[in-house]
Each structure stands twice: as C-alpha cells, then as structure tokens.
Length: 280
Image (cartoon, rainbow, N blue to C red):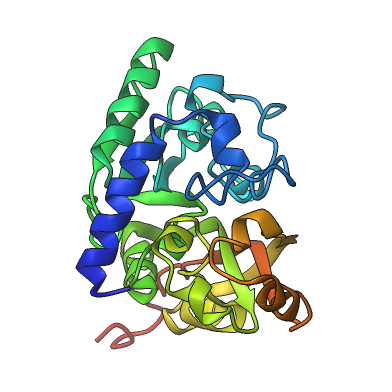
C-alpha cells in the first residue's frame, strides 16, 4: 500500500465510483469496493429504514453500524458527521437535533458532496450543510460540535490517531461521539492486507480493537464504551480474489475476527476555577 497520500487518493477515486453505484451492489460487497458476493446479501451495513429522518436517496448501503441510533443527540445540538457520503446519517441526525440544531457533514470525495447537497436541496433543509475536507484536518473551528458521528470511515484513514485528535479539538467540552467502525482481533492474511480493493472495502485498513480503543483513551477521551459489536463475515467468493482455497480455510480456522463496533466516548468538560491560582 504505499504512502498515506497515495492511499487517500486511491480511496478518493474508489469512493467517487461508489457514489454512482447502486445500494444493492454496495451492500453485497465490502463497503462498495471489490466484486459483489453471491453468497451474502448484506455483508456490513445495518438497516436504517425504520429510523426517523431516513432518506432512501441518501442511503448508499456503505455503513457498518447505526451510530446515530446510539449518539444521544438532543434538540438544538450541533452534530458533525465524518465521512458523510450522500448524507443519510446527517438527515437522521437532523431529525434528532430539530430545526434549531445544525448538522455538518464532512467528506473528501467531491462526488459524495455533490450528491449530499442535492439530497439536502430536495429535502429543503437549511440547517444541514456539507463541507469537502479531510477529517484528519477538519474544516471546522475548535469547540463546535456537541456530538460527532461517523459510520465505517476511520478505517479508511491512514492516520487514525490524527483523526481522534481532530475529534477532540472540534468537540465542545462535555461533548461526545458515537462512531461505528471496523476493527480486527487477530491478523489478516498478507494478501488481504496488501490489497487496495480490500482497503477501500473497509477491511485491510482496520486495526486491532485494543489499539483502536487505546487511541481514544490516549487522546484524552473518557467514558469509553463499546455500544454494539457484531462479527463481519467476508464471504469466500470475495476472498477468493486474494486467497487460494487452502488459504481461505486457514484464515477461517485462524481465530482472526473482523468486527463492526460502535464506540461512545466523551470529551471532559473544562475544569472550573475553584480557588485562586488553580487556572494558572
């Protein structure tokens, strides 16, 4: 996989293509990347259709969880969605935050931004906006968001530590996030780790769950909680593009697990000055 910048450009190009794909095609593959499976109908995404604010045109079937369901969004909140795609999580968040709240979607793929803005225009939402940018360096001022959500995006970013630092910067003191993402327990086969399609497919860019949670804690967040965890089964007909039948069998028996987790954490509230000199 080359440099961080090359990885980003590969992801940007792939997700420009995915923006034009059918939801069914995206669900039958890993995050819309690679060939579709005929063995498994829905590899990663959860069903959004019963959630209030759901917008069919904005659902590309690319997620691996339902972070907005767990995000504890309140009326009037400012919510930021990292890797907002066509806008589905933003529109659900907008239902929760109401007319007096604000929702900002950030995505670095121009085709996704264009699609999301068109969806917002059709819905007539004037408190949802989409900004093109890198979530490692968000186009948002510090202490802006009450809540941050993200659905199956951080695994695509080479510098995950940098993203969590940005999340901390952009959240208000006392704010929180709920993020769904792909993590590992065990080691992927080398051929899968090195495959660009599997990186864009949210698999080979994933890191160990313990490391992922450790990054959250090391960046100062508290009340770190895994709200949901589910196993992801990549079907044989997708793995066969990278592994022999014997290698697939070895992988299945290795104990390595691919999981979707939804993680909650809080940015501590600012300490108040309780005595002379305590804030020096």
